[in-house]
Length: 172
Ligand code: SF4
Image (tube, rainbow, N blue to C red; front, top):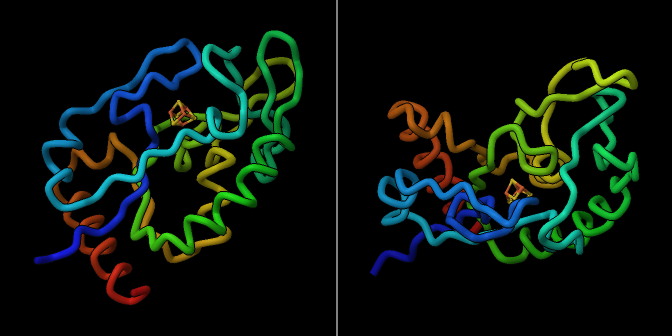
């Protein structure tokens, strides 16, 4: 029997009620197209770091090369809370043998390069990875990362499946 590759996924994409407003971003296409191949490991960084549900919406600010995480309305900064959790969690993920990660587009935590970053006057100053995605890229630089929107393209989907299978083989 072939053991499925363990692939992390932003938990809201599996329908878990973890978004700031108590909702989800369930993506049935992902489950149908990749669920047979992968054992999903759902993770919500904002929930796991203790921000809870519901929580006020947040966004990235300051420098796109070193963004900070801010609550939009209050201006409270949550960067350190998230990064402290990430530092511990990526060690566990390495140990658990993840073979890839499917990330939610544009999220300040999970976005894989398309998350907007805002300046002091609320103007968009660039875009980057969310803080969790960024930490995965730093601590597990060869781990294949994908997002749910690009996975709708068959070529990209095939690349991700092959890359995750290859990563599983090399890391096991
Ligand atoms: S995008 Fe990431 S942080 Fe936001 S709800 Fe989904 S899993 Fe949680």
